[in-house]
Length: 583
Image 1 (cartoon, rainbow, N blue to C red):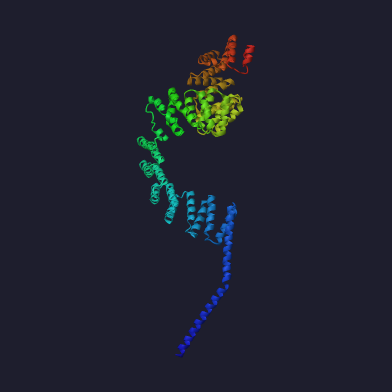
Image 2: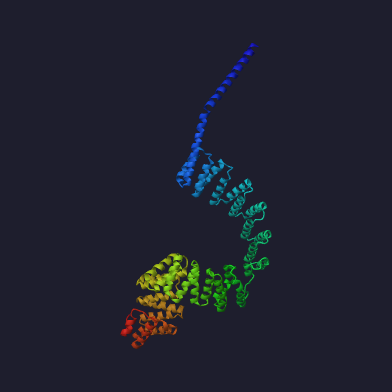
């Protein structure tokens, strides 16, 4: 008994000692707690200050200072989601997708409930074209926040980018079940069905929209226009009639139901029926021009002046009803140009450019008229203006080069032609024209070898081009070089284009330089009988030929005629004054 009691006392003493040690440890911890808390608090405050400093540098644009500060925060606290997020944003702005992705994943791992982090991850996926990953991400966000419409739209967007159209449509269907009929959702589904070529379902979506909003005319126009676009003319007309039942004065529906001509003899009648519609300022000009564009094209292709005049009445109405829009004046200019009235077309094109100088085709038509008229002063002026607006158009530099060549501004001409060559691209026809005029310009600059190279380049593009053969032979003969080659080329040019008076004149000139006066006279006579009596150069050459054939009186008569027609060669006046030939 005594032994058991002693053992009990011993156990009690041991337990008491244990409690005493625990008590002493607890008291010790309570004693040092303020110091420990102070150390933890100071570290957190220091990190917070460093984070604030980093954000301050980022906000003021000192990104290179912000990055190491954010990185230091993460080194001390790898779970600091905010610092990782800010680094992800920085690298996303810099398009460093790899680092942006690494840091945003760190942020999400540290704070998986912050949905803003997921949205940034979606943006990064988008930049990397990781469309399926982004779609999966937004699918998850929809589950987290099923009332957030934005997530549905982004989910569908990435599915479309991933070419999973069927699933994207299901997403829109799911969203529509929650929010009800929505114009935005229906339009998106409609666009997807159109892209898939499923016209039936595309039309069904628009019909659903009309059913939901039966008095909205715009929705009905969408359906009518869609039917028109896919060639369902009958269904389109039915919808336009429904529009007129609701709004009898609707301009677009009235325009659409105006019809189209079936045969040539109905064109004039059809145009007449459009007058009341064209006189209505509420109808957009684009619809009006679209209605008559096939007839404008037909008038241009056929040269039918009656049709052109009837169409011109409507385009003139456009000018009056829509005076601030360039399209009416441009349409009138085209009709006048293709019906042969170039001067009136010129006025219309100028008015077009006053209203809108950004239409290249109008500039081109304007310059071609001046080129046809041989008004090289205006050609130079307007090509300069056009180049200011379209500096990369080779055609404009070519036109400018032609104008400067004809005005004997040879350095400017060569610069313009060289600029055109630099911009030419794959337009072989235009390059050929440029090389021909380059050859003429270099010849005028007395650079015979370079001139020959340009003509050879033109003939390489088109070996049987009569213009290149004609001008090349002229330049060779004028320099007295390889007369036999010049004769062969001039002959070939006339074989290729037998009715050209200027080619006949040149062949006669080449034969004259070869001292073959009999054959030269034959070709000069052909040119004179082919409309050459108004060509001062031909008249002067004919006088030279007669002088070489010992007919001085006849030579004087032709020199005088050349002068009357505006001949201005360096030696013409001396020939007349001294009744003598000067080469």
